[in-house]
Length: 245
Picture: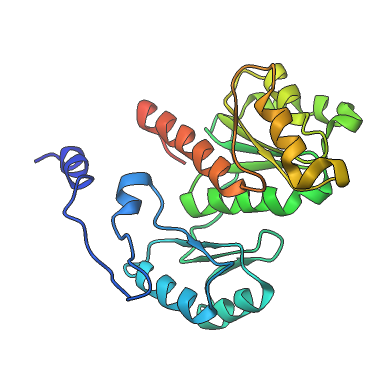
C-alpha cells in the first residue's frame, strides 16, 4: 500500500488505549487532527498533569498543556527540563518542535492583538502554532484606537494564510482586519475591558455581529481554538500544494 493511502486508513483506527483511571489518553488524535490531545491544566492537579503528559508524550510527540498556574508550570519545568514554558501564555510544551518564522512566500499564521492587555491570549495562540509546527508572525498593540499602527502592517498581513485576531474592549479589530484583507480571520474576544464589557461578552457580541465577511468567532479568551483552526488552514494549503516549511 502507498504510504499516503495507509495514513488515510490508519486515521480510522485501530485506536490505542491509554487508561490512567482518572484520564483516558487519546493517542490517536495527532494522526487524525495534526496535534495530540491538549491538556487543560487549570482544574487538574500537578500530579494528574504530569501523569497525563508522560503518557501522551510516549514516542516523543509534542504535548501542549494550557491554562497553567505558575506553580504547575514550575513543576513541569522541573520534571521535563527540555520542555518549553511560556509564562505569558500560561502554557508548557513537552517535546517542543523549534518555533518557525515565516519566510518569503511561506504559508503561515499571523497573530494580531489589539492591545498589550490581550497578550496572554495571543501568546497562547502562538504556542499552539509552535506545537503544531506551523510558522507564525506576531503583530501586537495594533488596535483601532491607533489604527495607523495596523495600516502600517497591511502589506505584511496580506502575506499571511490565515489570521488570529485578538481584541477586548469593543472588539472592533477583527472587523477592520477582515475588511482590509482577503484571508480567513479567526476572532478571539478577550475578557479585557471596563465594567460594561461584561468580562468579554461585549467583544464577543460585537465580533458575532461583524459586518465584515469571513470572520469566525471563538469563545472568550480561547486563543487555543482560534490558532488550531488557523493552523489547519495552513496545513490544508501545504497538502494542496505539497509544500511544508
